[in-house]
Length: 284
Image (tube, rainbow, N blue to C red; front, side, top):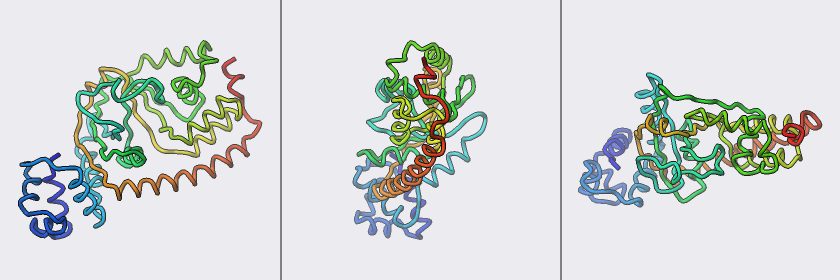
């Protein structure tokens, strides 16, 4: 991991020369120079030191990189996306090593729109890296879900919750349609959403209640690359380290969003009670 830019940014913002920076971190000047010029590899513990020091001093290195990478690359049908790595990661991407059939839309490579979304994902696991990619959409067929019955049914199907209805023409038509697309774009689902969809699948709430409850938990969009063609259109731009203090703040923000969303979900359940259809009515 090349740290030239990180060390330069920290030094310029805090007006520290490399000797002062080394003292702040409790390492030698030679060590800092070796990191800066890529002469030696850096251990995770020292990455944690550098990024924590920056974060404690109100320097969001990852936020800076996100802005710069989007400014430099989001043109000519290119978009910047992020991947929170749950396991060891390498290029070229292997679908089967990085996903499973019971993910939201089955096997694929899952990315999101912002660094924060990806950092939130890894905040609850023992991983520290987010990867920034450039995706070129030229020649790719994309399908975008909104918060609707189709998306709820697709997620429930891929997660294995609709085995009793798997032969339904509605489900078969939907799954066959998705086979034609390279990239699926859909609202991000988290555990709250899965619980809501599970209630819908269990005939505990109607589609109307489910839709309005899901709309109350807005987390942005995910991009799912489903074909080899889509994988050939991505480029890895940067490996981004997330220090523990930044992960802790992500957890706090996540908890705040969960509390706010839970209140809206309760209101939606009450307000739309007895409106809409149950899943057995939709798929019968």
